[in-house]
Length: 93
Image 1: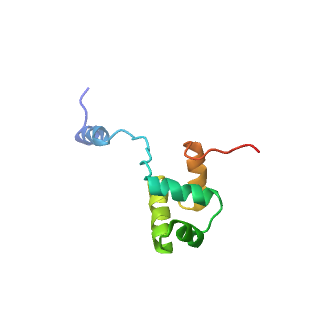
Image 2 (image 1 turned 90 degrees about the vertical axis):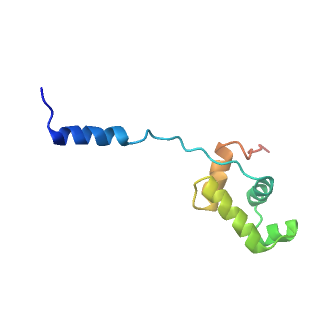
Image 3 (image 1 turned 30 degrees about the vertical axis):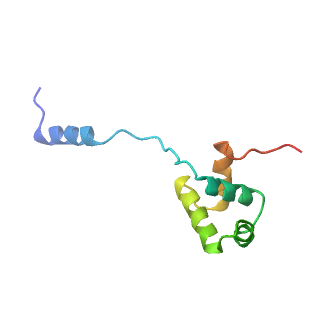
């Protein structure tokens, strides 16, 4: 059976679509992990900056970088993703 030109072109387009890729988070730097743990401990950006002797803007930049790497849009999602990827452990009291 002969295929029409339209059918061939649709088939060719399907073949050009790349296979789906797994989302893999980039690894966090040691400083980002340090800040992540301080966020988990409940510290605010200003408090984290004072503890680490860095500016609030630097803390915000690290937080934004972590959120981008982990593909989340807020602190709650950041902490949830960190728990799920075992970067943070929940300790039973």
